[in-house]
Length: 290
Length: 162
Image 1: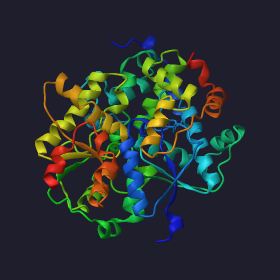
Image 2: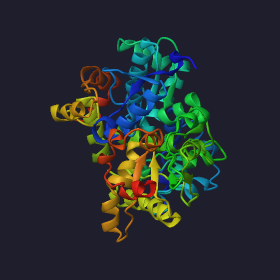
Image 3: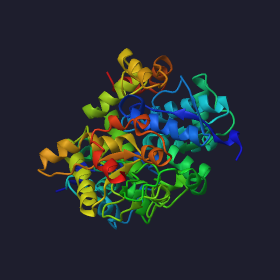
C-alpha cells in the first residue's frame, strides 16, 4: 500500500479534543502503527451539525468551509465523531453537484477545489488498512473478551451518503473487534440510537433510550461496550451513573473506544491509550486478560 | 379536533420547497417510521407518522409551536425504512428550521448555535484545555471564530439567535 493513500486531514470536531482525549490519543497511536498519517489542521471549526436544527443552510456552509480547507491541502478527511462524519459527508456530496452551495462558499473567500472524500476513522481501518493487515499486527490476543459492538447512527446512515457496510445488518465493527481475538455478542437493540441528540431537549427521554441499550448489553453478558462516537460514549459511559441512580439499575459496564481496544491488541501500553480517562473503570476487562 | 380554519394549504408547499422536503406527499402513512423510532418507543408525544400527516394537512401552527417537533434524535432508522423515500429526519430538521423562523426556538438548540457562532465550536477552548492536551502529548486546538461568525452573518442565521 502506498503511503500517500493513507494521509488524511484529521478532523477532531468539538467534543473529541475536549471531552474524549482517550479516543483521540488511542486513534493517533493506532494510526501511527499502520502508517496512517493524520494531519492536524488549525483552521478546522465545528462541523456544523449542532446548528442544523436551527438553521440548516448555516450548517452546510460551515461544513463546506471545512471541506474547502482540506481540499486546498489536497487531503481527504478523517473524522472520529460520527456526527462530524455524516455532516461533512453530506456537504461533500452537495459540493460535487450543488452549484448554489459552491457559490455561497465562494463568497466567503473559500474555494472547494479538487474533490476529496470523508471517512470515519473506523471505516479507514476497515477499508484502507483492512482486516488482513490488522490481523498480521495483533500482538496480544483478546480471546477471553466478549464484547458488544455499538455502531450508533451517523457512522452508516443515511446509506445514500455513505454507501459502505449494511446499516440494517452492519458488520464492519464486528469484524474489527473479532480480529483482536475477542468475540462479539449478539444482543437486542444493537442498532438503537444512543439518544444523545435529544439530551438537551428532554433528558429523561434521552437517558431512557440509552438505558435500553445498557439493559440489553448487560443481559447479553458482554464484558464491555465498544463505541466509535464521542456522543454515544457520553450517553453510555459519562451518563451511566445517572441512569443507574434514576432508574435504580446497576451496570458497571466498561465502555471503550474501538481504537483503545485495538491498541491493546496491537501491544500498545494501555496507559498510552488513555485508559485512565475512561469513566467506568476497566479493571474487570484487564482482569480477564491476565 | 381539527378545525378547517386551522389548515394552512400553503404549509405543504413550504415544506416541499425546502431541501429534504421534496418527497413529503409520497407518504401513505404506513407507520414504518413510527414503528422504527426509538424516541416514540419511550415517549408518545413524538410520532413521526403523525407529524408528517400534520404537515401534509397544513397544521402549521400546531406543528411549529409544539414541543414534540424538537424530539427527533436524527437516528435515520425511519429514513432507512421508509418504503416511499420520505426523508423524515430531513423533514424534522426543516420543520425545526421553520419553527425557528416563526420565533419558536428551543433554548437548548439556541444555546448550541450561539456557542458555535461565538466560539467556532460547541466548547470554548480555554488555556486549561490546551495545557492538559500538551501534558497528554496532543497538539493545541485553535479557536476559529471570525470566519464562522461571518458565515452566520451571511446566511442570516444571526437574527434568530439574539
